[in-house]
Length: 503
Image (cartoon, rainbow, N blue to C red):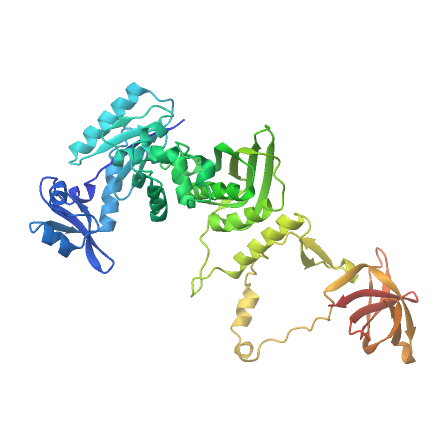
């Protein structure tokens, strides 16, 4: 089990520029077509300066206000350098812009060792001239919330997240404005009051971010090892439910939050998912497992959720669900999708999503991509393989030389005309009755229970071979029927067979 130390430096963005907390100073940046206040020192706040206020309004409230213009790139570099000064505690650390630091270490919670770590971190950061508040907890989210919004340094016992978060205002949980307005209208003001609501009354009324905040307020968080090496990040998340769920829609609502957490872990690991395993843990003790193919590697929850929704709506839940988990069954290296001039995704990504849905609906063996096989018999001249994107052809020396030919550039090289073949082949071919006319050309055929006259008859094309295995010799013809069908028939050993047709 990992424990996390979170440090919040409320004035870091000004302290790094050499400003102290005893003078009215503000950090400003251009936002919404105006210079606005991002951070202000306590003396500035006492004179009416507020975050988000325009510089003109802030100067009107505090004429002696000194300002510092934001340099985001230099600020990020300085914060990372400050985080590295805490490497004496653990090599697993991270900077959380704009004013947070995280340190992680493993092992059981040891109050004596953790109090010493808190004291050493405070001494190091204050010695560098920074005001700081520090909290140690089971997960970095809880630790940072309490470091920013709590009254003082804190050392949370294992499992004490919900109790520690309860007094914090709802605004500390990062709720959207619509959710804050709804909860405020119900008279809720603190994280503890939100945690007191049953899950069934939250789902469908709050946004996905609001449901995630409800889980956070209850201390139900899947800790993300923000500072851990990429390979150590587990790609499996579990959510235990306080109130059982028996319907698909509330289940999808919770799965959306889990997929968002999973996307963060995939990003940290530099990986993407090609398949998911979703386990529904029933109250009866049984587990209902769904395996889902995603097509092209992705870590976008908005691409995973529609496939998951389609699958859930086609199955019958085995009972009330008390917990659920999501695991990346087949992680793959992540490569950002290529974009064209208009920032659209490549066509092969949409194709991959379609193939994933068809695989999911029809089964893994029902979908194949045909390719040519070097055989004489038409019904054996192809084979099926997994419909993955075909490999991109490479240009050899000959092709490169021909590409420079000026005649080819103007006229193009002639290509061999391939014989016309129907897209629908019958295997085995279908035996038909045939009457031949003058010169042995097919004239009338018995098809679909009646005799039909053939028109536009073309042929013959003679195909033979494979004497080493099963010799054959056929005479192929193409023709149109009275009904407008275009047939591909052949004659062999005095019999007529329908080999294929054009749809």
